[in-house]
Length: 103
Length: 103
DNA sequence: TTTCAGGTACGAATCTCGTCGTACCTGCAG
DNA sequence: CTGCAGGTACGACGAGATTCGTACCTGAAA
Image (tube, rainbow over the protein chains, first blue to last red):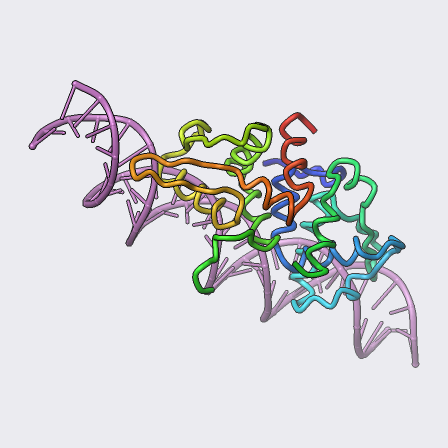
């Protein structure tokens, strides 16, 4: 209810709901696996959905406090909020990277 | 698709979807916070929903591999599958108990 | 045996979510 | 300026989730 803060990390329900979707989980797992934490474009994830749907997924991830979106007007940059996640939800990123390696 | 295994821990998507609901998260958080790991009854959680809905929630938790249900015909016992969870999803229970203590 | 609380099965109402179509905006390359 | 790729806004549709009503089963107490 009311406008989401989207500025800081949301509650566990919002985070789990965001990570329940396989596409969004793939995005965060890829970001978490890349230690350089560089800025990536939305297209670099090769999601098998339309661009409207991608916009939706990245918005959900941003409102859950998991990523940072940098708007360049024309294109958009994605960055993992690793520090905030590890501070408020320690161990979460490890769960995602572990799943990605099998089992 | 097909009948769910419900015997061993499910994938991350199923687990996150199960824990996205606040009622179910409350159940697991209470179980995780109680170190004795004793058997509890469904009623002991005081969920503000009807008993049909409780049946539904406990089934979701069981199919996600998070709890064990012991059927006595008349009543039902609930037990946290702590060992399996900590083995396949280390750190998950800590996230739930941390949220319950406030941020 | 009768009664009753605890649970389940099935179905319906409602809501949310994931997806896309159409239309529009933004910045860069010709 | 024109064209074009990347993104967004709004609306719609189908699938799934949450909740409950009604009906029924099970075991223990009276």
